[in-house]
Length: 183
Image 1 (cartoon, rainbow, N blue to C red):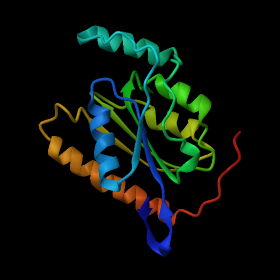
Image 2 (spheres, one colour):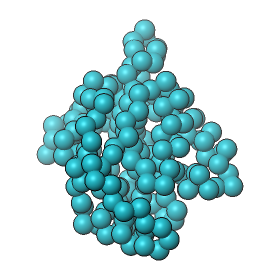
Image 3 (tube, one colour):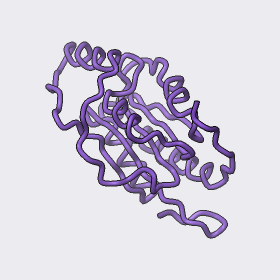
C-alpha cells in the first residue's frame, strides 16, 4: 500500500502481458517505483514463440481476431485495488489477446486505471480501444514506450516510466470523479 495525502492508503496493482520482455520491464519499473503488487497475465497454453517476421504475422492475427486465450488464475484480485496499471505490447494497433480474456472476467467498473503500452512502430489506436473498453472506469492517463529492452535510450525510458507512475498515483489520490454506469 502506498501512503497518499489525507492519510489514506492506496492499493496499487500492475497487470501486464509481455511477449518479449519489453512490457515486463516497464511493469517491473512501475511496480518497484510505487511498491505495488504485480500480476502477469499468462495463457494456460502459450502460443508458439515466433521470431522475426512470423512473430508479427502470428501475433497480429491473434490480436485482430480478438483471440481469448484461457489464462492461469490471477494471484491478485483487481477488485481489491484502488489504482490499476494495465500494460501490453501493441500488436496491429491492438492489445495482446490475454487482455481480451482479462476484460471478460474483470470489467474494472469504477476503478482508477492507467494504461501503458510498448511498441516498435506507431501505437495505432490502442488508446482509443482502451477508452472504449474502460468507459466505466476512471482513466488517468496513457504512456507509450518504444522497445525499451533494445532502445539506446533505455535509461531515459525507465525514468519516464518512474515519473509517469508517480504522476498517475498523484492523480489517483486526487481523483474524485464519479463513475459512469457501464453502457
